[in-house]
Length: 476
Image 1 (cartoon, rainbow, N blue to C red):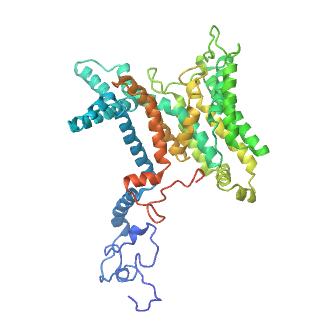
Image 2: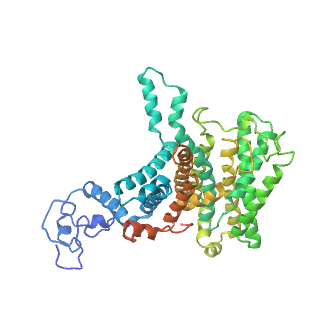
Image 3: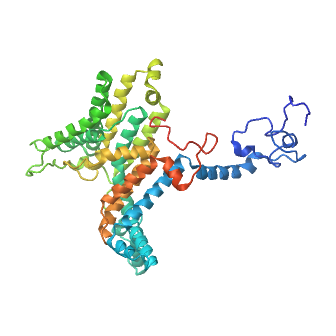
């Protein structure tokens, strides 16, 4: 080692920045050469050692340290997972302490504390078990099938379908949430609050339904035309919002909220007219669409999952590519981050607003295909449900990113599918509205990372640690 401090030490890791981060900068005699081991950068003088291959020896410890840092410091992914865990725990407490049997047991807690705790656990665990069996996997169904097999009874299509039915129902419930959530998330990334996924859903559903029963086309072409019609109907509704904002400065939140009421009333009116009302019916319901316009089933006639799920996944990939790999997506993100800077850079902010709302509206319109062409094959006044409102929650939980939206929608789809089974099988009956409470708790905890940190006693992540704990915002 040179005595002159102006002469840098040589050797692996002595004077070169380590791309692996702080974990690789720890002194290691096996990973540093003689000069590095005795240099000030190494922090100790251990004499000469043989230099090894740093990549093979330090990669595993470095990965392990990164995982530990992520958990201890709590980056955004860990905080989101812990927020879901906290929501499930709080939801379990609500399930338990709204159960009359549990309340009666806790009335004599000091006389029999073990029984009171056991009753509360059984109530919450039973509800969540029913929810899991209705949304992911039912072990009782599988056990019954193998029992039949042991008796020499061959597997039937109905038995196999029963095994996959929970996952099928989760996918069916998640599909419109994915598409509507992508609509809200895309607008968020461009700095707009699309609260009007409901109106855009209705716009797409109306055109899709009309094309489904009023037009006669070949089987594949009819399906494609209805899907394009759903996108067009939603896009037109979204375009109105973008156009009003760009030309008049009208705030998109007010316009989209008001347009929700307009489209809901329009749907009520048009379903009562002779052109859209099912013949022989007096309630607000459309005729059935033609069989040629149905979206094909993916796993046989006994399961409801259909091609709209694949369409939703394809749209998620498309939105990811649009935002991260295209010039238009760059303009969306730039306008969302700073409209004034974007305008200075030559980007037409008004044109961007119109375009992003047109695409976002089209995505919300596509969500209607999962209902009109996938499961119900007609349109009624309740078809739009709460998808427009749930889309905001899904976009928030997914941090306005396509992959996050898909995962959040699958979570909420599982809650919806499992909630129906939970309500039907639990005694006393757990109300389905409790699922909405759990959804609200998930959003509450996700939106308040400091609260999650306080609950789980996490350190605050720093720039040199596992990563930022808070989302950068809708546009980041």
